[in-house]
Image (tube, rainbow, N blue to C red; front, side, top):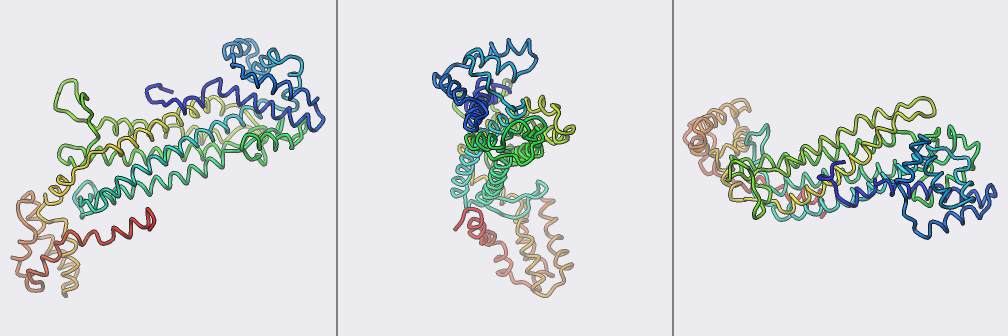
Length: 437
């Protein structure tokens, strides 16, 4: 985790003290149920909760010092709690194994992280929707292969982004549900030394569901799906960030990141206004996606368990969620403050002498009786003259002067095919699909 790209709420989930607090709750809830079942004295759980009620500070350094000797983190924690609580603490961890604590804790952390990320997506969706409504009918050029294609609206560009991030949100909600499981099943997951009722009790208290078959570890296909979804969200961030970067190029300049008073774009060139935030988002997306392959490789563990996944998750759990949280927040700010230039969009639309209307003429010629091949040939013949003139010639005027075209279409009929508003008749339909009626 790099502090530069981290926000406090998400970072707090992965702090050692936060992890140890979840460990304690798991142990205390398990001991509580064991007391109800008569396996341990009810006084054991009471002693734990009474100590907890004093809201003690978790002494991370003391636990680390014990682990330096035991070489086992869960044992170090249990030893520290035992010293703090006293004799009743000996009933903790009855019939449990370390994975019960570690895996359940990881899933609690991932669900907490997912909740923050879902809230992040909600904020981003709100910002995108607001700007999409603002520019629902703002004409701009649609590009394919980076080349002028046909007119669209800037609102439609943003509507596409909204629909994509709405899908991302749905995937994350599903991934959260899939990873929100609890395992308190003991060695190799057979419940030989602990009643399944303990697992159910802990799961209920932590807002999780029970893992049907844990084999001592919670299956990592769940986690692989979770991190894969984070990777998809990161890619969607990059797609929108890349669009902004392209639109900010000097030759385009249809939109650009907000440039605050006092901001500097270059140490050498005072005129520069660079898309640094969206470039940063492109890089952060790569970092998040880098967690996906290790998560997939964690699925294949030996037999009932091994710990080859553990070191990986200590990296990718915090890094992927913290980075994605920051990236979503940054993208929301970019969209919220995005400078949008409709006049430049119109200028770029007009840049190539009406070439953007070529398909309408092509279709009209076929409807006028020409073959599609002849229609294409006639339009392309005139369009290439406009292209070679760098937009100085007018496609409409060239078509009017072309005898093969004028033989089947009048000047007025041709002019009708250059109506910009024609291209926007489907905007309401698309917006209704994306945002609702």
